[in-house]
Image (cartoon, rainbow, N blue to C red; front, side):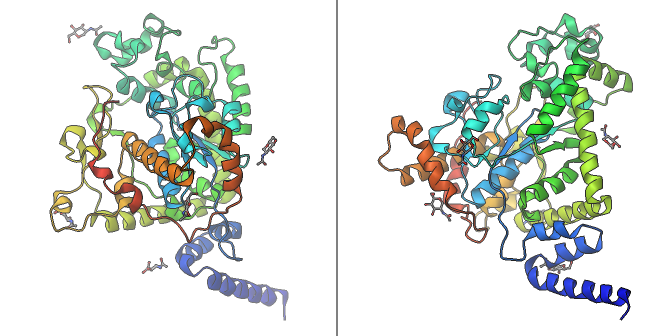
Length: 450
Ligand SMILES: *[C@@H]1O[C@H](CO)[C@@H](O)[C@H](O)[C@H]1NC(C)=O
Ligand SMILES: *[C@@H]1O[C@H](CO)[C@@H](O)[C@H](O)[C@H]1NC(C)=O
Ligand SMILES: *[C@@H]1O[C@H](CO)[C@@H](O)[C@H](O)[C@H]1NC(C)=O
Ligand SMILES: *[C@@H]1O[C@H](CO)[C@@H](O)[C@H](O)[C@H]1NC(C)=O
Ligand SMILES: *[C@@H]1O[C@H](CO)[C@@H](O)[C@H](O)[C@H]1NC(C)=O
Ligand SMILES: *[C@@H]1O[C@H](CO)[C@@H](O)[C@H](O)[C@H]1NC(C)=O
């Protein structure tokens, strides 16, 4: 036999054994296989020797106005499906970990320790997170193009952040012409008005402009050592392809619908001149963004762009199928908060000037006699504040069941013991908890002001 024939025979044999081992994921594997994905990708879907472990310790640094609520929702649902613990803020911290104060392990509700996952807003502190999270934790974050991001921040926090509020007529152009007339670095909430990404990552948003480029490059390499993946909002689905591989998760684990968006008419298009001004004003963020965008594309090219493209298509197909299963047809229509009947699905509104839209269930689904959509479907469209509250409730219940005699004072001393207990069990993807226990009655909760 010629070498070529032996080679072809080997390919045939490995393909067949491949298919035999990957029954449930046949389509994904097959399609990915033919569209130029490396074999290692397919085996990360499921190892051949039984189910390969999905990675379960994740710290996602949730940045502002970067599609991070959508990532958070993916992580929340993964945690629930797999009976994992999500670190949640104590109630005095609101639904964030006392942001903008630097993160401290004291901000974590004791009933939500030891955690597997952390994803609520916080200002990054490497040492504090290390103290809290398991050693095997994978760190992830997401950045967005500074022009679009700043426009979004300016609109969203227009009435909330004083640096924006004092701008006449709420005009972004006016702000950009003379930012120092409106911006006060020491003022509360000033982090929304300059280098917000840098601030969220724990950096110095007000580094003088002469030092900014060198500082930003140093900071970027430092962050690159901490974060295994920096997602980019403009390439969200492509970022999910990398995320899924990094964590050895299934495609089904990263399906989503977009959350916490504005109505199209509250967005304004930026001229290239204004984009340039925004980039100059947010110089550190801009360097960070370019650095990590380049890094993302390097990783995508390493994987093979045709493979990535194919998987993005599959992701969208799977999502459409899920939406079909959940809501019978297409997504529930986007509605302004006031129009959403179900309080649990109403997104938080930063001010009367910006409309953050959400989803409401179609009337024919809420009617009597209709089978309501399963919990997972509702969770997929549930805004962050309500979902956080829900998780805290179910985790507290679980905690009290697990440690019935423990008083809250004992909690901190025994976190170590609980972690040891937890690390000894491994995650079996087949024995996932259904969500229904934790959501019973959830949709009747009332919403308190944020
Ligand atoms: C594979 O794809 C076909 C057609 O696209 C579909 O009918 C079938 O249900 C898929 N199988 C799996 C296991 O997803
Ligand atoms: C985590 O790392 C620290 C410091 O390297 C070490 O002291 C500790 O034993 C590790 N914990 C586990 C559970 O491996
Ligand atoms: C603000 O708006 C008013 C009327 O809408 C206009 O007269 C005024 O010139 C505007 N001011 C600035 C600084 O654009
Ligand atoms: C991100 O990087 C890619 C590849 O270098 C480039 O084509 C693209 O324009 C960049 N995107 C943004 C928004 O800068
Ligand atoms: C609800 O109504 C919409 C539009 O009339 C339709 O597309 C959808 O399939 C219906 N859903 C159910 C569950 O009947
Ligand atoms: C979920 O976790 C709790 C507490 O550790 C445990 O008692 C329970 O058996 C777990 N359930 C599943 C399905 O893993």
